[in-house]
Length: 75
Length: 347
Image 1 (cartoon, each protein chain N blue to C red):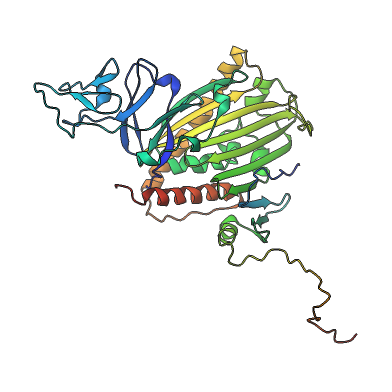
Image 2 (image 1 turned 30 degrees about the vertical axis):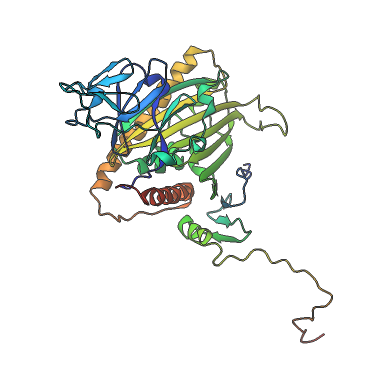
């Protein structure tokens, strides 16, 4: 089975992929946030609530000046 | 049943509009359509301002309609240019003229505020008027609300059960879909790409392919009215080349225009444009007959469903599963259009 490529291009595209071989849907917001669900109503509600509850994949930019936020318990 | 006003709707095929008067009701508004002597398509309100007689039951005199009851006469702008027995034409003697665009062999009519009609927003179906394609088409009146046809077309898994032996095979219902929504342009796209699929008679007989196929169904819905199904059929394992024409595959562009007529009736315009066997009349006859059969299977089912739903309470219970992902997206966009079209509307 060939998984369809994304067909629409634009700045505000919502996508829901039905994962082959499963009952799982994966929703992808235009902001990059993702969530999986077992049925579409809940997933659309989450997608369309953007930006509420959406957190794009975290990008950590290392800064030489930033102090470590966490100290290992046992270094 | 709410309608999306301030939108363009397919009201007829170009070939239907001529020097005979054609009656159509769109979003509950009765229209009369005709073509002027110079070939321009016209849509006017289909009620004489005098005693409401249908102008579609009247006659053309040049580019004017002469009411078949008392002779009130209207030009193509809807202005009354003659009333019987007196010289003075009352200032309010006019009927509404609707913005009309003829494009891709379709007659689009704007239902809403005239000054908001923008022809550049009309979605395209270029295959319907392209010599590289052969087209079969029809229109079936549906005794069901338009949303049932939208649901039907947005979820093609029903082909397996309702259209088995024509276009349905087990793979349609069994293959996962990808759904995309362009929030800014208002488009829903649903892809179902099937590999190693059975070739249904609809395509086996028209393409001559024997054996298993790669079958792609890509729905591109431009709510509220235009539905496009890009159908790609190829022998199993044959995919589009990375560059250049996909000339080894067979393509059918299946076009529907979903036009609400009244709250419980819909015009179901359908067309199949193909890029293969375009000069073979027997293929055209076969596809016309087969697709009409398929459409009538839908019509029968949706007419039954309308009777059931009309008898249900307003917020009847239903259940949506994965196959409904695209249909749910379409419903939301339509609801948004209904809301936008209601703001400031005269009724």
